[in-house]
Every structure is written in structure tokens, then in C-alpha cells.
Amino acid sequence: MQTPGFNKKATDACGLLPQSSQDPSPASKALPPLAVLTIRDSAFLRRFYRCFYCLFAVALIIALGPYLSDDRSSAITRLIWCCATLLGCIGLWCVCQRQCRAIPMGSLAYENGLWVLRDKNKLMNCVLVGDVLCWPWLIILPLKTMDGCSRLLLLGSDALEPADQARLRTWLRACLKPKG
Image 1 (cartoon, one colour):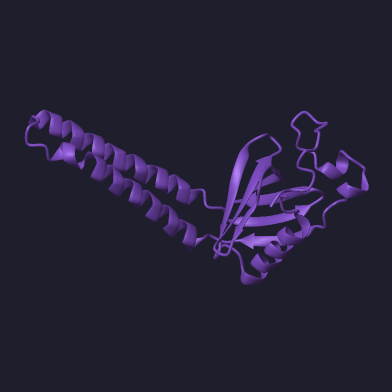
Image 2: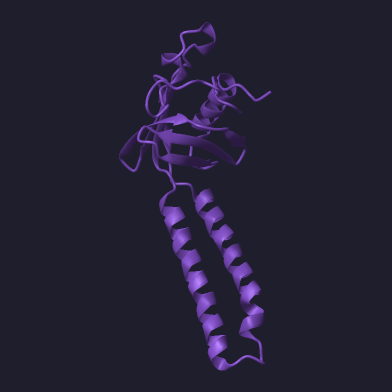
């Protein structure tokens, strides 16, 4: 899906003003507001991240396994490879924990041309900056905050109430134009 006015010209410094404030043409009429959606902690995303990073750890062990069991190398060399494997697995575990802590919880709404995201009591005004992906098990919203930070908002199938998820999908389908 593509946001309306994808090839718009920005008039503010960050290029974050909604199109309705930049171009008064009839094709750029304001989008209707989206009522506040409550975002819960997603067990699906947590399991997805854990599975994904466990597969990375298994791939790391498979890739470095021959170096760990090489009989021709010295004990010091095998110890170095063992430490490298252990450090890689610890690094993957830390990244997985950081990703799990970044799972959004709070609320999401669309009003006055901006997406209003409240994530763990932090309020952010955002705009869409790319294609929205809507799968039955995952919705991905690429957002950019007013201070210029990009953020991918991943909403698992269990992060929203079924009624809220249906309302968000209907709003995205009705208000955002597909490419082509």
C-alpha cells in the first residue's frame, strides 16, 4: 500500500507536514480520523524474535562448529573459536532482549494528518514514510517522528483486540491507495 501524495513536495524543514496542509488540491483531501486503538504486549512478536535469534545462534554454531572440533588445531586456537562462538551467542541474546523490550504497548490513533503513538507513556506524533504491510498475522507501519527518527511499528495479531484490528485494517484499506 502506498500513502496518498507519495511524491509530494515538502515545505517544512523536516518534510513531515501532512499533505493536506501543503497542497490545497481536491485530490489531497484530509483523511478521516482513526479512533484510538489500544496496543497490548504481543506474545506472538516475542516468540517470533526468540525463534529468529535462536536460528541465528544455531547457524553461528553450525558455521563455527568445524573450527571447534578440528583435531589438527592447537588447544589455544580451539579455545579462541569457542570464545568467539560464545560471544556471538551472548550478543544475539542481548539483541533479542532489546528487541523484546521494544515491542510497542500503549495506543495508536490517526488525527489531523498525524499518527499519534503512545508507547510506554511516551507520546510521539508520526507520519507514514513508506509502504504499509498488512498480513493476517502482522501489520507493519513505517513511521517517522517529528524529530526525524524512523521507526517500524510492528503489530502482531495478538497486539490488538479483534475489533481494533479489523477497524485498523479497514481504515488502511479504505484510506491508503495501493501502488499502480
